[in-house]
Length: 250
Image (cartoon, rainbow, N blue to C red):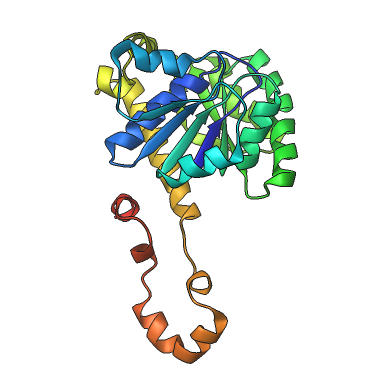
């Protein structure tokens, strides 16, 4: 599954979210590759602090080739992409190859206003990639504030659902990044770690729907007519998923 983190505005938590989600998925024994497609290279610098090998990180500062993404995607369960800010051709190419786009947005007017331009990119990509889905992710939320309470109402005008998971404005995220580790490594019992685990749960729920296999996909119509009763009795949808995915659904 290819998940891209996109927003034309910087500083909304794309890199922080991508790194911590990748680490959480890897802790659950999924194979994960994080592509650092942002010329700023923040994810690459994060890994270099402690030579963190919790998951594989691929630095891609130059042109994105579809063949490269196909190879990377085939080599792992989850391919996460930290996209650059702005409305570049690179981001549009990333969206054209993604299964899901997650738009991190903080509860501020500037971030909310910037969503319009990001969604325009997503809609353009959906013309080329109709299977692309999109979700908002509220980040840097300060509980108890009016803007935090109103953020979902304000996002509804765009007609895109926000994930149930939310990431707060927490020092643990900053400290973990500074030390070159994920927040679950740095402060496993913290609120920040709980938020990342909740996000990971929600992403796995989304991915299980992508992996759902139908009987018609597995058996041609002629075979179904000839062996319908035998096939239907023996069919087990989860048996066609990788072992890790079956475990996550049990």
